[in-house]
Image (spheres, rainbow, N blue to C red):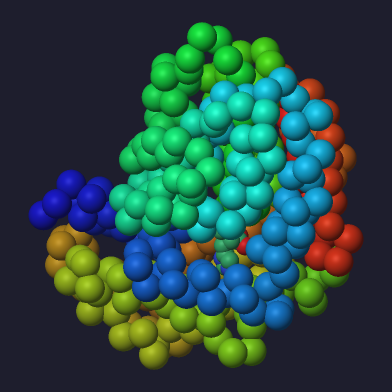
Length: 313
Ligand code: AVI
């Protein structure tokens, strides 16, 4: 088994054996099928997040150079599809040549990103987890020149709130005064709107969620019967998050051979697959202060409330 498959097997085994609530880690959504399904989600009329982020970035990109010391390198946590980042790089590259370091665990996402953006900046892909990759990028800093870190698209919402604050502190610990982080966060909106975004009538998000079981079947020799699970999106008002679950429609047992796991489900038991936390703009500024950043600017999309916040180290 490859090292990736064995850590997938280990994580699946641990998460599905939890006595309190079975879970699956959301980072495993993004195999090739899951990535394609997420791209389709981003086009859905019910899912406004990606388009809102794009609108905000179009608005902030020309203003950005005036808000921070000229960065010599832009480091992106997650490699994105290139279109949002291009806007930012083009504006910054007017001042001086730029190095762009996308960080991702997926070699194919990094290769795509390098193809898209090598005309705008010198691309140095880093295949690693976010913080390991950031530490690596920081070591390559030239002559004390400032860095701009991008964490776009609202991915921080997929961390628990405590983990999100710890993560911001971890990013801050890698940076020096004069460096900056541009952070995207999806904001709270009416509940029916948020639920529709994660339970669209065409069933694309359902397919994205169920693909996690399909991926286990393909890669870990599992025997989940996908039709015996249903996609579910719930609003958790206490934690201000949309939770995605897979509900077992019958009492059943699934075998995952490569994880050496026999997994029993009661009827109506769910596997919790993802949390999508929603914020308000003031809360983001507060989180920034707690992580020892100063929030220098915030741009908000009013059509689909979404914020990009510029945090200075
Ligand atoms: C990647 N992340 C910001 C998306 C979100 O909205 O939390 C993932 C997603 N899950 C279902 N739809 C989209």
